[in-house]
Length: 328
Image (cartoon, rainbow, N blue to C red; front, top):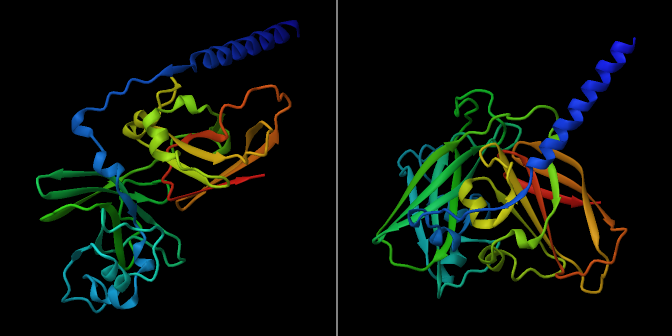
């Protein structure tokens, strides 16, 4: 009996030592900004991308820009790319749009095509598109687009759940320029089940500090944040990570993990200091729902240097099409 107790004590000691070493190794460190000039995202960073623009178009404009192999569009081209450079053409094409466009400085590029793997019969989205990069060579513009499967892959076959063709329109609000040719390259990005257990237990919430971020990133993304607005960003590759962070934990693996950044503006009349904890995390068909608890911090003697709050949520790599954050 004594031997069993001794063995149990030794095992507990080893577990505690392992946890202590793991925590000790997870330290904040400075991140080297190692992007090369060939990987410059200047044009991408000044472009707003929308992969569901078909929903805002007028019926007449959608019909005029049908592409094969849609039903009844056999004689139509496989792709159509349009440039909208003024308000008059915009009003003819759209019933609504999520942002205002300054046509003195911006143009709207629309790319139409038919895809056979977007929506299942039950209406759930199987694929979504994301903008990886935009490059310019002389007067030609090249779009690098990722096709993301909206659930974790079971097999390596990206066409395993193909459905009937769907009319799609990708929209790019970008700086106005003279362009002779647009080219679009599509590639699949695969996401695998890379963790064990439930998703919440593999998620970490950091009540983060704005000093973790690069000044340029803060200036470009949160400088105009106004109460009660919030901003949510998704960090899923090395380039996004080093562009955003100047320091983070050294055990973070961008190949297997992702970050959700949540910015919020606190009411200037609210002088409380809050802390946040993770209540629940759910993922299904590209929808990532994160529920947080918000409580007043017991110690209120800290000096508030900013009314802008910043949370970093660390998760396994997921094909997150929509991210919803709810505060309790």
